[in-house]
Image (cartoon, rainbow, N blue to C red):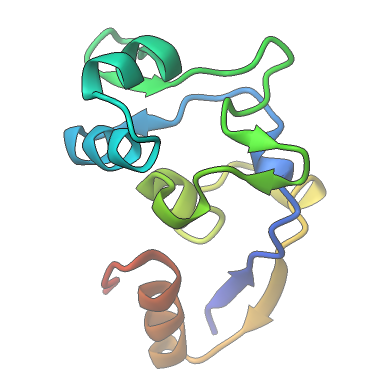
Length: 124
């Protein structure tokens, strides 16, 4: 029986350092949302990925996401796919110790539907 983790928007995942990779489409969408040019968005909010093959969101000096404002995501409606996919489609050992998502046993069909609703993507 699959487990679906229901995000509680606790922002714990936004508070640890990491690398949120951005696609070209996400850069465009985020720049439009912030009402700025893509060039300015890239200069202000992104950095090269560790492998130097793309862009990732910048972190604040304390490791938090650049878009974390208090207890909320400032770009929630247009947040990157990697953020939408957490914790169901990517996670790491022990994430449950930090993440407050509620685990639910669901049928395979319900899992696929919940993933589609949460992330906008189909999962086989």
